[in-house]
Image (tube, rainbow, N blue to C red; front, side, top):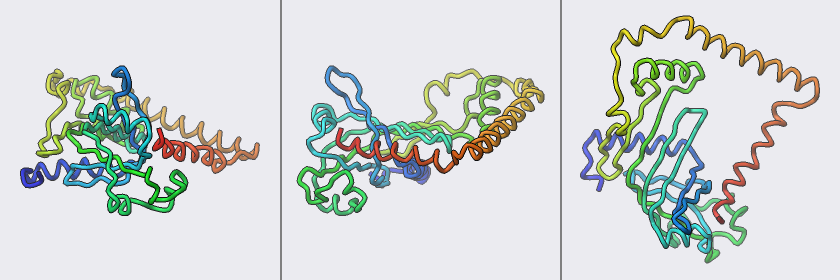
Length: 247
């Protein structure tokens, strides 16, 4: 398949690969009973790019495996609020029991979820053959997001919010989403209509937010509640996401 990609196509696929590899947890969506969609968080083990495969560990007798056997069509959704990057990937999933693949991706941390180890006959991989990926890669700062939003509203051009494309992962061809192709575009005069006072207001809001955060941190120090203590409460969430390999 890779031989059919032009240089530009390869670069498009490489970009999608990088964006996906930078985000660990994907919301893995299957078609459940009655045609309803079912999603659960799974940790991505690897993205093999040429852009064609993604791998996840699973228990072979989990409900999602039964759903995949009924309907192979799946969606993988990746999101990083911090980086302002979002990806939606379509593909076809199958259960893979290849021992060499399991050995390749296995690490000791997985024993927390598969206590019998990699030789447990119930340990398997979900292999997803990817079809298309739609991604949004925008400005990462608060002010950058806010200004981009204002400009998008004024100009009717969503591109100022960041790059948005649909990539065919077989050919590497990239295109704008249909909504972007048909959206009205306004002139440069419309861009100038974004007033400086409005941008100043956004910057002031950011400064005020930082000030509030500093006050909260100071109050936390007084009450004995440190920022580090707050962070520890978030760690179980990721562990819980990994446990969805069983769902």
